[in-house]
Image (cartoon, rainbow over all chains, first blue to last red):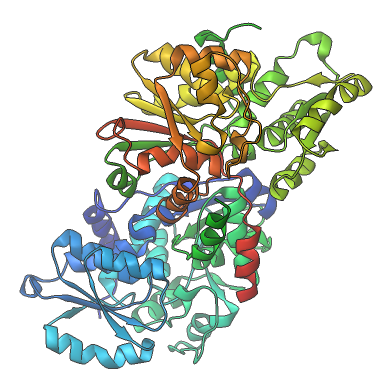
Length: 319
Length: 319
């Protein structure tokens, strides 16, 4: 696979102009007081489909070679990548097929169907991977990987380009890590502009495969990851591993109980709806991680797709 | 009592500069699709204390005459006005005493205490009103009315000045009505700039006193208002009644079940945490009220202080 360059990310950002939202950067007095830092939140929860994933999916599908025009798009995802692919396909006039493994947040499911995509059921992620080759053959489909794809990474890198154009003088940036697509794009974009900017991966203790993979320099999947941050259960790929090894300043391990606490801070104090993966990147600030105190810290809030059904059912009963 | 002029609102906005946040205006493709309108949301949920109420409270306390300097501030509120007064007093170095009638959202209570105010308990609003004179005498206190005060109204009017400086060409503006302080300020600010702008009051069916009061031209309190929108249970005062009679284009009555539905739309689609009172102003858009379809509609999202304890307790159990 090809490497991704800074110029690739700049071109991706150009191609996304007018299609993806330029998301706002939020600040908050209470967050600064709680963290001892000066914090800036890049709000990809306000992105189309409610998550940054739209950027990479759209960019990868847009850039498919001419000989692939007309072929259906296939992906495996039970999360935000599924929505990103589904919306990108609708906008680009392509057929979308999503292999969903296991339980999926019903909000995300509805959204995928709403964009006109077809859902193919699988019992879990492994089962989805088993079913993929036959589906690709049957449909003559093109597979779009959720993260281990230079075009996807270049699209996600646009988040950090925008972030630094709004707040040029960040000292540190935090992003959660699952498969590492966003984080790789973040590293390459940031260091293309300011090689001194320190980038930390935030990873839940219950799915701590990326930290071990980077340290051992090989992809080491965790057999049964357990975390509220569903989006972060995936392991790195070879492309993302290679980028992260070269660029990361380190890892912040986030305990499971910090996740709802950080989410609650976002909802109650910042009035922002964020999903657990976003909370993983916010948590190190809220526990006053020493490397962050006194610094200008950028946090990527990756998305806001959280299932609020139980809350609203209870609330509606009062109405 | 004095009238409020457009110039009063302009001066209030000047005095609030650098103290109150200039809140963002949000737009959303999904909201426009759902409503058939072009919608703009003035996000006072991002205001200090999580609600517009800070503006009026700060302005009224700031402008107390010199002979009242040093006297403690007293108010009756179990909601956002209490927080607004408490924070304003902290910033202005005044002592704050809040008479809270009946049940209060624990988040709001904690915030009031966090700002250093003293809470005085009352069983309900009537009991608080009974206790007020003795408390004022005991403390030699100055009373700050939550809405029926020209200085408070002028402060709330700054919301609409900002809104029209961001989006000058609104056709219609929507705001919820409780005591009418925000709505009066909104009318006076809007019509000082564009007399053709149509302003509608949004009122819950379970607390429909303002509509009747405006039609009958006298304050007609509802004996037992019942609505999820706690902040809208109050009745108009003589100052607000007079302004609303002169300026309103009409009322939109919002049924109780529309309130959680509109809140849910804000949380799930817009990723914004809003409280029930804000949802009341959003609901007419979501039901495609005929007067709004095809129009450029501004909605004031008044606040985001909603009790999410039950949701997070359930969520934390999963962690």
